[in-house]
Image (tube, rainbow, N blue to C red; front, side, top):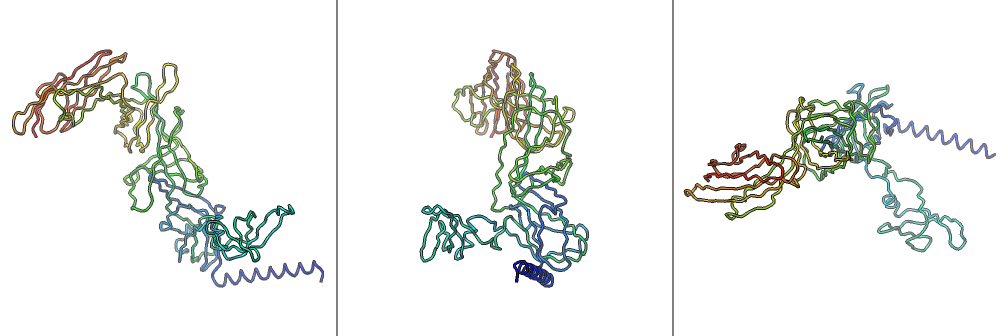
Length: 482
C-alpha cells in the first residue's frame, strides 16, 4: 500500500473515532463545553471599599439540550465560590444547576512535577563531551526539595537537562474555572449571567485641596483609585462603587487598607464621570462610561472637581485632663498648637455632594508660585451639609504654655482652681487661637479674662485674638464639684 493511501486510511479512521466519541459523549450526557472571555457580551463590577467586588458576567452560549458539563473560565482567582449564582437571561426556567465545582489547582512547575512522580519524562540537554543535544528518558522518582531521576539503572538529582512532559494532567488547569453540571431545556442560543463575589478588588478616594493665598478659599479635586488584585481582567466593564461601612462576616481574610500616594498637581475641571445616588444605607457611584480594569492594575478616575470652595483655617490649642492633677505652679512650656482646615460640605460653598472616605492632601503655592505640600489627613464618609475637618500639622510660629496658679478645696467634694495660658505669636500677621479646655465634674466659671462657650459638658472653649509679635495671656478661675 502506498504512503498516501496509508495516510488517507489513518485520517478517515481518526475522523470516524472522533465522531463516535462525540456521539457517545452526547448520548451519555457528558459533553464538556467551555466558555471564556470570547463569549462574554457584557460585564459589570460593583466594588466595595472593604476589599470586595460583585461581578456580573454575561455570556452567550450554545448549550445542548439535556444534562451536560460546562467549564466557565476567566473568573477571578479570589472568587468566593459559595457566592456564585447563574441564571438564564432568556428563560429563567430553562437552565438548572445540578452541581458546581470550583477548580483552582492551577498549573505551575512545582505541581506539574508533583503530578509526574513515578512517571516517565524526557530530559533535553547538551552533552558536554560530544557537544550534541540529546534527549534522555528518565523516571521522576521524587520532587521533595528538587527532582530526583532514575536514568537506566542509576539515580541522579540536579540534572541540568530541560524536562519535557508528555502532556498536562487533567487535574491541573491553566486558570481558575467554575465547572457546572447543568440541565438545559433551551434549543436556541442561551444567554446566561453569572454573578459572584470576589476578594482582592478595592477602591478608595483621594482628594487634593489647593489653598489660596489667604487660606479662605480652595480648589478641590477628588479621585477614585481602583486596585484590582482579584486575578482576572474586566473588559469594558460597567463600574459601580459603593461607599459606606458594609458589614462582612468574620473569616480568615485580613483586609489591609493601603494608602496610595497621589502626585500634588491640581486637576483641570472636567465633566463629572460618576453619577451619585443613595442606595440602601450607603451611596453608590456609577461610572458613566465603560472602563477596562486589568488584573494587577491600579486605575485612577476623576470623581469630583470643585473650585473656589469656602474653607476656614483654625489654630487650636488643646488642654489635657492630666493638667488638673499637675503640681501647683508647674509650667508646661511650648505646647503645640494644631493647624486645621475646616470645609463645609454645602452647595452654597460650591460643594454639597456626599464624599466617600479617603485621604485629603492639602497644597499651597509658595511666593514663587510653586505648589507645596502642607499636610494630609483621613476623612470618613461625609454626607452633604456636614463639615470636613482636616489636621495639617502643628504651627511653627505660634506657641503656647499653661500653668495652674491656684488650687483650693472648698468642701469635701468642691474645689476651685485658677489657670493661666500664654499664647505667643511670632508671625507677621495677627491670628486667632481657639483654646479648648477640659474641665472635669460639675463646674462653674467664676471669672475669665476672655469670653468662653460651654461647648460640651466638660469643655470650655475660648477664641483668643493674638496680634503679631505679641503675647496674650488667658486666665480663668473655675469651681468644680465631683
